[in-house]
Length: 278
Image 1 (cartoon, rainbow, N blue to C red):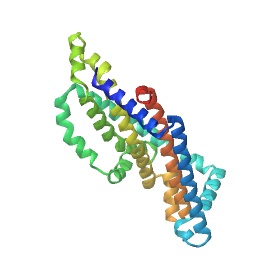
Image 2 (cartoon, helix red, strand yellow):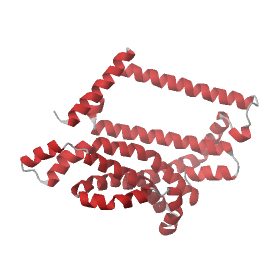
Image 3 (cartoon, rainbow, N blue to C red):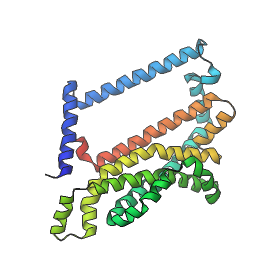
Image 4 (spheres, rainbow, N blue to C red):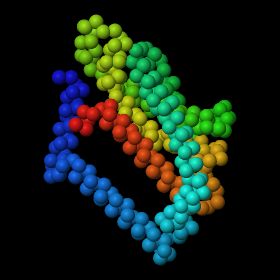
């Protein structure tokens, strides 16, 4: 039995054991967790609103849920909310595809040449240590103030994490499986496509999950520096005018976007790695 099969069976058994110890089915356990999370969130919002209305906290500094809701309602009615979300989503998705998916492909391709991987490792680490906030102004200068520069910033935020994660996955492939393929006369391309890529998908998906937040951060940073629309632009305008409710409304939209992107990646993971959810 291969190492991957043993790992997959171990994950499935662990999930089943956890559910059995809880004394309920996985579906009921999930519903219970969601219910408790909703109760905790509602309690925090109610406490926040009551504290603001009673004067226990300053609404100028902390706003209130009702004020944030009013901001979102006005932005939705004017069409600003839809436009900002559309712009930020487009920047994030395009940059995520270029940096996240592209970085994963490059990382897997490094399996072909360990020498190239060793030569490029310190340069990759050096690039990965550069804060996106430091390099974003240069990217704006080089690529202009339109969506192209935002996509490049997002891609820069994602590429190193995806590259390193996928390359690490390629290095963890069971050597016995590779030797078995070679004994049947398989070419390097066949080994790569039929063994390396499938065995590395867990690492690739993990890298994509990590990059969701990085991608959105890159888009927000790009909008901070130079933009006329987007959620980051809305947050920047709110902070410049000391409108805390507008800033918090923008942060709420960012959290909702991250949640939606995470859900999409989880669906992709279920499709690519069905054995993890068997």
